[in-house]
Image (cartoon, rainbow, N blue to C red; front, side, top):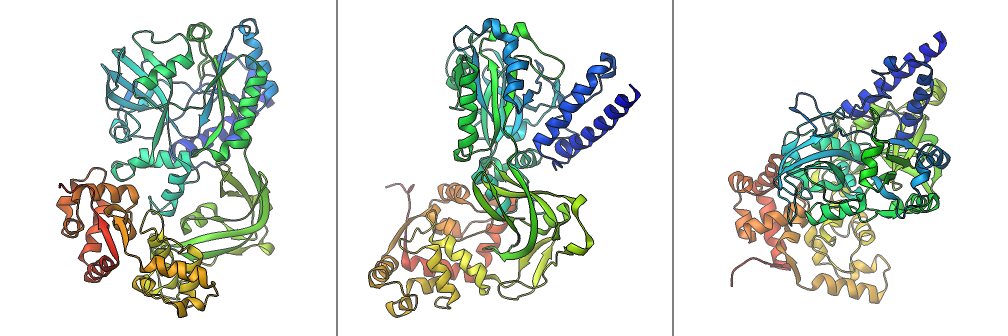
Length: 583
């Protein structure tokens, strides 16, 4: 018994450290699967000790705090966690078998996707959003109403009829894979990058001013906590009713009776989850009948009527061979880790982006290390951690941080461990990446001119500025051996007068932090390019969702005479279409 108590104490300490890193620091040290296995091991050991000695155990408590020093509010009904499993046999024995006597009822279970985000509790009184809370400890959550109210998916006022006077909505705030990639590529937090979509959501929700980035977050309703009147008998009908109130729900929800149907749903999304625009880490199985849910009830940590059936982590170990540094469009220099090729989910992977040198320091990377690679959302390769137990001095070397740009050899500026090339567009790499941005679909959208062609034109010194693109001739293109028909198509496309909406034109300018959505908001406000060119801080502050950092970048851009000259040259080649001018 003494030995068991020692093991329990050691495990609890370890899990509490991982909880702190995951929930408070937002720096997960192990995968979800590794964490769940530790928790399961602790639960098994705790069967041998009295109930009163379990009360402070992580198996009995929820620790989902995102924020400290925020106002705390009590949930009207407990917002508990979920019991989970990675094993179909456990699912059958510990969950489905418990309710075998009811299973003959049609559509007894409801299956949903388990989103990889942050659980949130919304309170509506008379249809109006009163506050938004984190899960917290399951009974008391942190008040983050201000940031919650900025998310477009979350209605400030419910619509339709039959809305309860008091309605506590449960759901998940998440981020799409596209926005996750954008956030890490465009640095958002400067000093750090995010290891997965959940950590990115937490990072945004912790911000005191989330205006610039609220459009990067999404929300799905997955249930109800408290309501002063019954609005449905079954969970599936409850979600459909929530949809009529204007609350978004996932379309991937089924009701079923047999274990086989649950496994089919699980297997389908296990194979096809990479096709979803957002990350999931499994499915959630709930008893569909709401009155039976109440009858079955809860334990201290989770409802007994629901379980998460989670996917196994997609990760493998390999050897870090080298780290190269790559210069991007805005001058940011990004480290890229190259490693011995591995296959995950049938896809061969040999490199992963590290975003900035802080990530090298955080992971304590050395060339020659054994590293663990995971495909986030079954798509983006990510270095999770270094297997330090296998590190040897003879086979590892320090990573050398460059002092000069790897493309043009200009001096590198180190701003809080963010590396920048100082050469601007005289740096080939920056110019090349900007041209790729300029011709893209959301910008000028020049047909027959692709990224490969841009790379060749810059590398062979055929063009050195954007206006050179519009004066290309047959002789210059012949150097690339493109063929007559292809050459003619490219030239006809370049010589044609391009018609572009104002927001696409603004996006094409490549102003820092100004994505396509921000460009659209700015175009809608200023209506014409002339008005935009006169913009100042006071004007820009009036635009919804525009933050101080983006405003600063726009003002700095407009102050430079060379940028105004560049815009005037572009206008000779491009017709800007104005949507909102009164006729």
